[in-house]
Every structure is written in structure tokens, then in C-alpha cells.
Image (cartoon, rainbow, N blue to C red; front, top):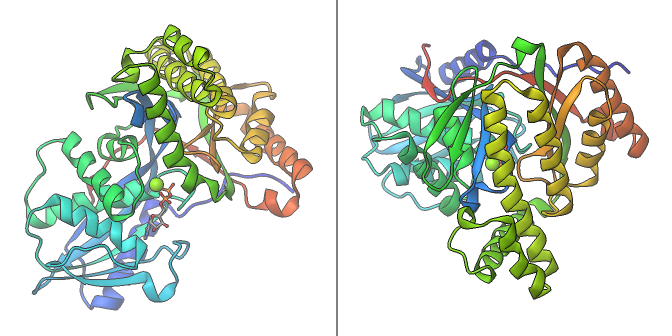
Length: 403
Ligand code: ADP
Ligand code: MG
């Protein structure tokens, strides 16, 4: 079995699908199109909700919405994403724009939430959504859906939200309160602010952002994402649990913010005998430092250093924060033992999803093959069949597209 990069539909293809679906269902051409990207986090995991720094980049994969105004105050929306959790009958959602309560159709709740927190009057519209962001894989298809929706609403009504930080907060509030996912602010921010050839350093306390030039190709390097194809149930229940533990540890250290902590703050937790809280806090404190160091390394074009920090991040997530899983560990271990690989780590919430690897372009084929072989050895051929690989360059954030 040869291992190749996964071919996702490209932008032109999803645009065509969106326009065709709109025409077939609504009998006209859409007047407006907007899109927003998914993201991969290079480093800074599980610290966006701990006042930390994160360093994501926007992906070339996007969620695209095309649509038009229509009379009345109803939204009529179709999603073409077959792999979205809902079944076919619920791939179309119609709801009144005067009642923005969350409903039974989960994917529509992301949209309702965004409309609600956008809080401008939105007149009736019809729309079609298509995405080439892998859904439910930790590349934040959810934030790309929220941000694409908000961008679409801003253009539809002509009323702009005053800042990018506000945009991200609106989308985050939608996910918190309409989907009951207490996510941090990273995913929405990078989906709004992404820039071509840049990673984004986000200070999750002040919401200040810094564009960090990141052109791996200048040293013949690439960013390889490996989608493990697994998502353990634990991801849902453990995420709020980690958040709560981080807060508990902070209280025990008598600190207001993890940004006031140093490694010596941990001695309180060491003495308390709260072994698990100690581990959680140690991850947060060391990961904040690693992320700042990683941004400095990228600024200096020191990709070796960047890779080393990525490896350390994985170890910390595996051993201290305990959000990795055997599949992710197998993939990361396989990668980091190959020559030409600078660093590799799990990315996203954990318990499945993706790994991100920084490596020389010349070894991509052999590294993908090794990762897959190790997966087959540990699990089986069927499991290895579900693995997908994507090479991604840092791409643009939310935008209007010409139809
Ligand atoms: P991730 O953000 O890592 O992809 P989430 O579980 O946070 O995973 O978000 C996935 C959910 O977001 C899907 O189950 C679906 O409800 C919604 N979603 C994402 N993209 C789309 C889309 N194009 N159409 C409809 N729903 C979508
Ligand atoms: Mg998500």
C-alpha cells in the first residue's frame, strides 16, 4: 500500500458545489459568498482558556457560505457536508429569525448562535454551506462555520462588527451557549485573523495578536497534518474536566492568572499532594513558556528549535495534561524517529484528531509511509486506512469571495 497525501476538494470545487446546490434548490444565483478557514495549532495546547499564548495558523481548507437575501424573516439553509453528524433530512434547516433559541439540529445551532450574538437585525436569507475542512477532526470546522456565518451576515446586512477580537468573541459565545462547548478563543481568532505565510501568536489574556512570518518552504520544510481518523468519546467529557482542574490548581496556588505563575508556583501544589492538579498546572505553565519561545524561534527562522518545542509540547500533553491517546502517540513517535523530521505533536483538544509535524519536504513520502506502517503494526489495516495526510501552508482568514 503506498501512502499518499489525501486529495480534498479544492476551493473551486466547493464553490461550484455551493453554487449548483443553491441554483437547484432556490432557483436563482446566490448574490454573496463568504468563507473562513479551519486551523492547525502549531503549539500552545489547552492554554487558550488559561490566559496563555497560542500559535495557530489558518489552513487553506475553508467553510464557504453562499446566499441571498429574501423577503420575510426566515433563514433557509442547506449544508452539503455529508460527513456532518446529522442525517440527510436535517441537512436543511429553516428557522424564524425572530426566535433564536437553540433547537434540535446541532449544526444549525452554531448559525443561530452567531446570529443571536451578532445582535443586529438580520432579514430573511437563504444559503448553502460547503466545507473542505475535515469535520470533527480537531481542525476546527466548527469555528470556520461560525466565522464564515458571521462574515456572511456582516456583508449581507452591511453592518460590520467593530474589531476582530469582537468577531471572535461573538463566535465563541455561539459555541459556548448554543452548542454547549466551552471552547477557548483561539479557533475563532485565527479563523478571523489568519494571514498567508504567517502563524498567529495570540495572547489569550489581552486578545492581542501578532502576525509571525512563517515560510517553512524557505528551508525546504513543510507542515504535515496527519488525521488519525479516531475521535474518542472522552474528548467531550474530559475537556470541561481539564478546564475545571486548571481553575482548581490556580486557586490552590493563590493566583489570579496563569500568567502570574512561575515554575516555582508549583511548589504549593507539590506540597498539597494533589498530584493530578500539579501535572495539569505544570503543563499549562511550561506550555505558555514553550509557545512564547516558539514564536521567538519562528521570528529567528530557527526551525530546529521550533521542532524541539513541538516534541516537548507533545510529551507534556501526554504525560502531564493526559489528553493524548495511543493512536496519537504512535503517530508522533513514528514521525519523530524519522530523519528529516524536526518536530511532531498532537494538535487540538486531544483523544484523537490530528498530529502536526514539521519536516523536510524530501522525506514526506517516507515519513507518511512509516507513520502508516507503525499504525498497522499497532492496530490493523482498516484503522490505518482511515488515516489522512494533508500538507498545509499558512493561509488567509475570513473573507468575501467573488462568485
Ligand atoms: P471540529 O471543530 O474539530 O471539526 P467539532 O465537534 O467542534 O469538531 O465541530 C464539528 C461540528 O460542527 C459538526 O458535528 C457539525 O455540527 C458542525 N459543522 C462543522 N462544519 C459544518 C458544515 N460544513 N455543515 C454543517 N455543520 C458543520
Ligand atoms: Mg470545534
